[in-house]
Amino acid sequence: MQQVVLFARGVREEFNKITWPTRAEAIRLSVIVIVISLAVGALVGGLDFVFTNFVNALIKK
Image 1 (cartoon, rainbow, N blue to C red):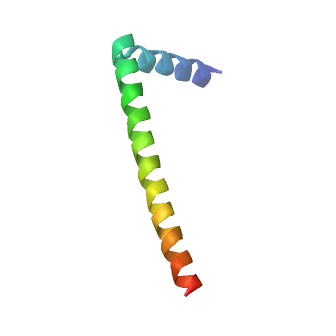
Image 2: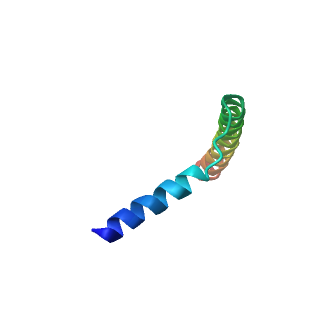
């Protein structure tokens, strides 16, 4: 039981060391993640479109 108490104290100490982002930082970082995700999705979708058309052109010949 003492090990559980020591573990809980350690968790609390580590939890107090966390520096949480401000609301503005969290929103800014979330927007960055969304924009990058959309850009990567558009890139992958565009490459998929190009390669699909390329393969279809090869198959039809």
